[in-house]
Image (cartoon, rainbow, N blue to C red):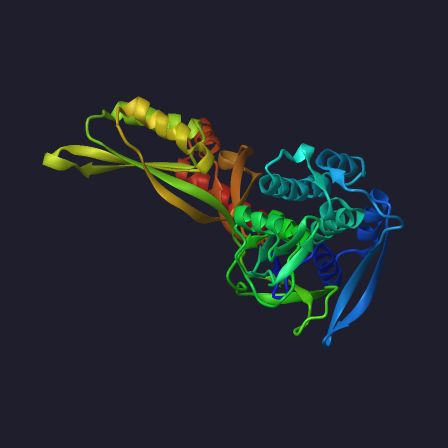
Length: 394
């Protein structure tokens, strides 16, 4: 798996994120074109030395001072910029995070607020450019280690405030990014916090893997340690996909086999990923069953209600959310000739991210149909189909 990892040990701002991504290998021309097509600015990308660290320094030059904007104006600018759909949605998402934070701080709806720093053209440029760069890199996952927010006080539009500034702190609170304070100046801006919140999953440390590329984005300030944002592109070695599931469980002791069989099919029809029903001995020695259902979290309530309705049970256990590793699956077809007659059979192919095939299984209904038509044993049909699939697709 290719992972993009931000290490904000000296904080993060929009231009630092953008610079680190260009240093990492994002298409510079594509990024600059996206910014300059959307906003009345010019972009220059230079090299900078930050206490011995070679970094990419992005400058957004604004030809004239821009006024503060309402949230709806910012949304309109992004929607009219002609950006690719994925970049547009990300940029809108980042500004929605900043809008919600400003709204919470000032106690007003976003639509009525004037956005000062985050409403300027350079902030728009940072967001649009960073979103373009991240999508251009095309990592499978994005992570962020704990953020250094700095310390001391910052001069905002409404006066001096302690670091982190109120809007930045609200973004950290709602987004869940772990942070700490070190230094005597602001190191994390609202734009930087919103970009990291939108794209990155917080992690305590770097994952195990191999580094493919590094990028350093230069900050404006001169600090005791290099004022840079380090960004890594890593191959983490995870060759399996991962999704999030919940497990539902219930014990029942007065339900017939026919009802359980019907419930089994109903749960699968309603979106369960897997269903198991196991015989068990209940209290007072009564025979019963344990019903266990694997499902996506968004389907849990619907499936739990169905179990209650069909069995009469009064409670469903929800085992806390778990991560499940899965192989990527695809369907294909093979042809075999049992009894001299050619027939097509669907096969399910499981493979990892590298494309290596892990398992092949023939579709049961196709095999059963051909076995009935030809008189060839079912297990022989299955074996022939799977052997042909391994020969064809390996």
